[in-house]
Amino acid sequence: MTRTVGILAYGSLIGDPGTEIEPVILCRIDCRTPFKVEFARTSESRKGGPTLVPYNNGTEVSAQVLVVDLPLSEATDRLYRRELHKVGERIVYDASRKVALNRVIINTLQDFEEVNKVLYTSIGANIEELTATKLAKLAIASARVLTNGNDGISYLIHAKKAGIRTPLSDEYEAEIKHLTGTASLKEALAELRAKTSP
Image 1 (cartoon, one colour):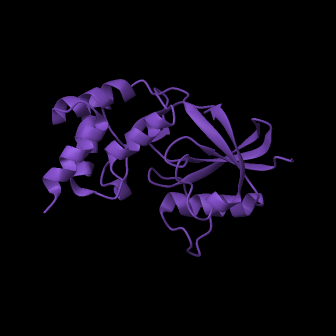
Image 2 (cartoon, rainbow, N blue to C red):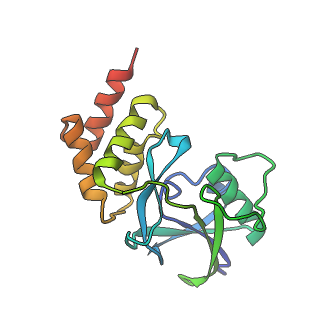
Image 3 (tube, rainbow, N blue to C red):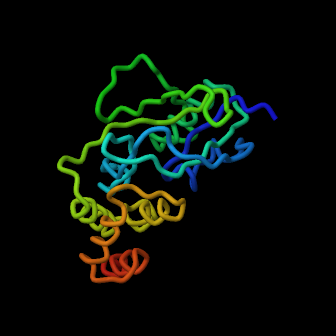
């Protein structure tokens, strides 16, 4: 099989590629990110819950290359829409737009894991003075208002399941459990949801 186009998944994309990408995945290749990442960005769609982004003080983490049956331009557009939560809409990626902190950038790796071109998203870190306690407070706050699995605690649970471990992830998890008085992330999430139920 000719491996021409792939998408590097190192966060929620591993378990949830979206309806435009999932059906065209030919295979998955386990790998590690060729750059360092950390839970260094709060996400509006996750009500402030921390997400993984490229970060100089992070570390390379477990990832997957999703080899897709798509031309490069179409794969780029579908990845872009997925990152914007605009799947199915008529939105295409414009590489000429000015780079900004909140701008989703699609970069390309050449000949990575024996795939000719591998796309990955890059968006700026926006959490100042990054600490595990700050991450935990953001994740807890998001879990208090979201019940659809998009909160920061759920994101951390899925990252752990995918084998992702960063310099802050263990302490981040410990702080969530400490601040909620629980023994596990699932217990913390259940307790927070119980408190927000009508």
